[in-house]
Image (cartoon, rainbow, N blue to C red):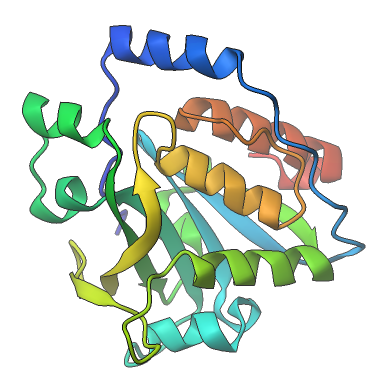
Length: 223
């Protein structure tokens, strides 16, 4: 069964043009530190306007795997970022979209898969990328740091996700017009020492860069 995640608030054309113009004047982020020889693969998944990062359960590290406690048969964990009220209340009208463009609280959706991402989302929507040991360590740290903790140091769970095998956590940081779900995904790839741009707003831009990188790594990885 294919699953569609909670979309990013869809940017309106004029607001998007303004955001892209302002971003063009920002200094580009420094390139990520090389992650070393490849040791595993992660996946970038396109879900409409939204993108996720997926990694195999054994590659997630102890602290990230702990987020999936209680889910049996986990083989892959996927993570996506979004504006909290928008994704949890599932209110996708014009007012909800416009309010999400202002700095607001964010949520992280974790999806637990018992099959590869290609089986859940469709092979055409998935790009596999090789990462090194340092890159994997960086991604693990990024994912766990993206989850807000309670006062006693536990991950702050907000509630069940939109389908079985998914759960919302409170996210650190904020969501706004200049830091979207796709910006979060891009920063995660950079934490994994993958050379993608940091100030990415749209899923199409991110997926083009991911596919280009996959072709550079190995033609067989490109989708």
